[in-house]
Image (cartoon, rainbow, N blue to C red; front, side):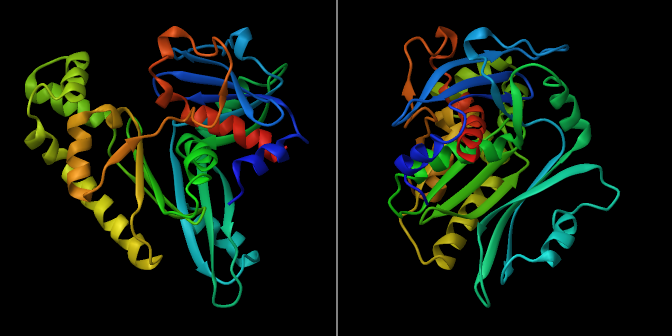
Length: 332
């Protein structure tokens, strides 16, 4: 795993200014990053309501290049492990490995994590996104600026930002991220700087809030307050809906400890559920570990007035957009 300084040094050859745009299910997040020589500077960030028409990018977050990411549509991500090196046979079976038929109209790509030889395994992160989601997003950028350089899945873009921050500074320690999205949760583990496990679950912020709203007959804002301040004992209520996914967290953690022969795994969390004291207490008790909230702004230099006042306390929403912009700066 490259150090953060090494990554920054590599950025000097490519574009120095990029906006990461995260098309979410309820909002659009924009983060403008600039290579500032020895570090990456967050120039500006905005959270916009969803738009039915053309995307209007505020001038302060506009750049010549854009990294696009989304949590919309039907996406499939899998961390594939197979013996030996990647060859033409891997390319041929990639669609099948993702569970897709030949008729499925999807974009497919992969990133090589580790390449093996002989009996040493290779590991690749594969992804697909349906054209029905991808094509309309790209239409926002059919002319003018910014010029799109990539299209990614939000959960994977967030992992890019996580790699450049906590993973790069883990000094070989095993470290994991629980990313709570609106409808899905992604659990990822890194060891010695390399992604060793990634799983996704059909559980997210929406299902948790809906359960509290229905059980206690309250609106969404009240449900959020109940979960955040633990004013009510909702442990039994949360257990019913969270226990299946928590059990899978435990199984995944134990599997990594055995397979990689590591222990003392550090865990961080991001997303709406991570702000709920009651929900996080349930997870911490099951895993017997304290879980810190990940701030995706850590490791970045923040320009004066970069964050609008209304998003000062919503840093966690920006992780995917930050990762999308970082990926463009590094790859160019």
